[in-house]
Image (cartoon, rainbow, N blue to C red):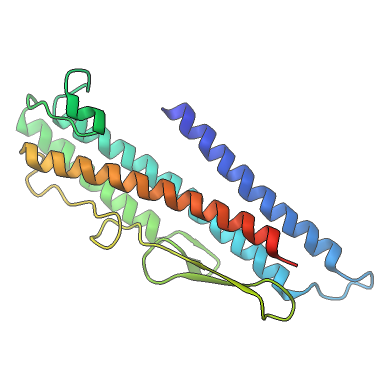
Length: 212
């Protein structure tokens, strides 16, 4: 439900903002009275939390596209979900939508795939992208010595086989097998993006708690 999604998004942003505010306060109190420079590791930690926040926002946007894609598959199958047991798993099974209409829906689905790749490819905060699958890592010093560090690894949420694994609609949604396969892939992708957003939230909270 959209209302539940909005509540989860607000909670995520609130948690990340609290972590960033905690580090900002630490940065302010960590400075000397004579305005000496603040320890660089505090700036690094704040930057890392901002990067995590950007990644969570991008994951929310990707999840929204995935839900839109799932709705397209549902419509392509001519199912409302009330009379199809398999739809309880997010996989519609009816077969009464004309193929011409399915082709239009498949084209829109392909556009959503492009949107997802664009979002993942531009999810930068500073110089780090945690979502494009190109090995983005946050290496964050936790104290002024640099000996204690936290490494936060990224993931691949593009549509390719190493990421969300969302196949193109090669048969334009004409077959039940293709619609079934794509619907299952969308459900798995939604689980992946939700788990990844939760991990980044935890990483941000732990980072704020460990910095000193």
